[in-house]
Length: 203
Image 1: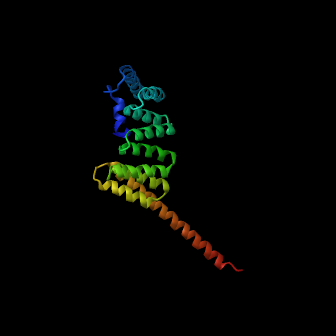
Image 2: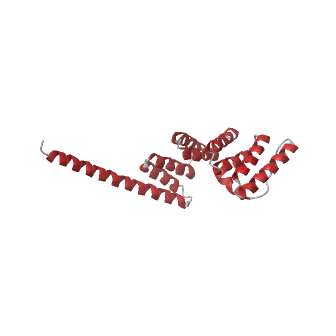
């Protein structure tokens, strides 16, 4: 399950946690519960502190890493979030969702190459995933490749999930493409007029 799918869980109570050390398990459980309460109250720095302690106690606790990644994103600690999702990928290398989670943060940082690698890997693990296509569309938008963005959003729409944000994103790509074409036409017209003026100016 990806961090995107688990965000709602942050606002629910009660986690079934497993561990071999009963004392450490109880402590990590308390810290996660405390972190969730702080998340509900928008105390994201406090949540980071609690989740970090839970991770330190139970390094293999998947949910603790997920919640910590979400909290790091909320406080705009993108490097921290990338580290969290990287650890999750190490724990669950075949989980496509964590690749997408890291890709989203890399995209925020402007690392388009790194984001693309993670998204393509996610598609290998989960072929036809609409969210991966959507993320690839976002990468193309950042690059200014609006035709590429339209193509990726269309692939996402073709999965027929009914996700309305895909149509919104594709509409934005079409609009950006139209504006770019208009700008090119204006620049070409201005250049033609400049050349014409120079040709008509007596030497």
